[in-house]
Image 1: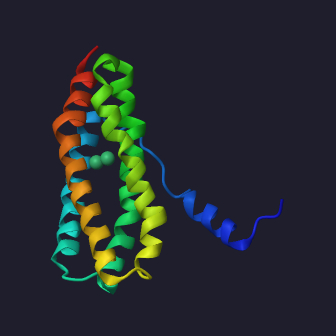
Image 2: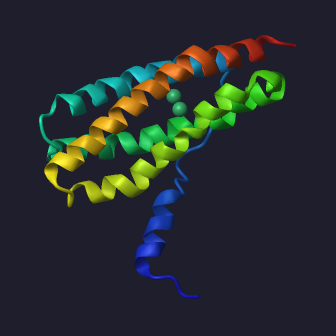
Length: 157
Ligand SMILES: [Fe+2]
Ligand SMILES: [Fe+2]
């Protein structure tokens, strides 16, 4: 079946061939970097929060955040969850639930962001506020539960 141009463009965007996961980076270094990335994302989230309304600047911030957040989540699943499943599977339940939150992050990026500009101002602002709050909680859960478990798992023989 021939695919239309919009489909083609979408799939090209989804497959980011410029990005590779570095499987040689030690888990403790990776986790330090992921935490630093959380701090960088949080400063952008604070900027989003500070805006009284949803505006062009908010859209720009969301667009800039999208790629790095998706890459960050992919690394967490490919490396952090992998070491947990490999060496601490019996304690993995909560961390798996945390990683599954990547689904709503991806949904917001793929489905909600493109609709924000055409939404009533107030509603767009609410959507963004909800996303910011959920994302902050997600980072806290990762740092309190998933990252410490991955470090313990990694240190096992
Ligand atoms: Fe995450
Ligand atoms: Fe994270």
